[in-house]
Length: 313
Image (cartoon, rainbow, N blue to C red; front, side, top):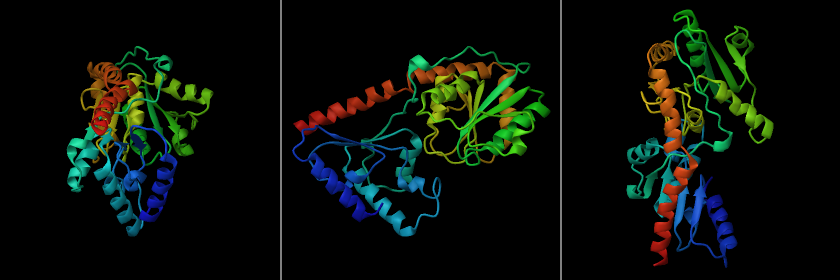
């Protein structure tokens, strides 16, 4: 997006809002409000800022477009009444890149799993070094999501620690060389807009024992939130904003220099102690107490109500 198109979009929105009654504007992952002219509160929510997104999640963006996107976003951040973000990573990025926004306007509030509580079946799991271990891996771009690390992990668990571990993959399909070793199951690329496939997708969460997510780049990682809803211990990398994994609370977060050997060691240690059960219990508690849309909505609404009253005055 450049300034001209952003300005044109804003003009179009301005025209549509004319003569309409409204108290505020809420923008989701969209910064065209940077050029809106109005005396109403504007609330904005995004997983990341441009400075963090570029050359981390997307690459090869022309320098001109990078500058345009940063300029538009900074205008938007100055204009918005509140900026709701799901992770501390975003706030740290604002400070590190010296973006001129009053940090009091930036509100950290975790998002929720895109699930209906009635559909979630969270089984009681039994963990131990003598129990089979069904690991779940989800991601369309499986290499960026770290399938190579997950594959190395499942092999080491079997060969070094003698854990009867397997891994179920949903999303991108691994090459046949991985599927042929008997430890990798491919559950397909489910379309959650299809009712049957929606339930099939989450049945894999129900059947899993742990969730492995060694992603190398992630702005939000809401799939971790969904794993927490099913009470799954989560093993991930410390990168970007996967804010639903609290190290040593509901799983482990390892540094990017760690390999499948380190993931396997962390998983084995958790299985050989009571840690894995703790991680499972805590994942579900975190979902119930924090990682849900009711909590998000209640928190966001407080700021919206307060600022609508302030603008009305």
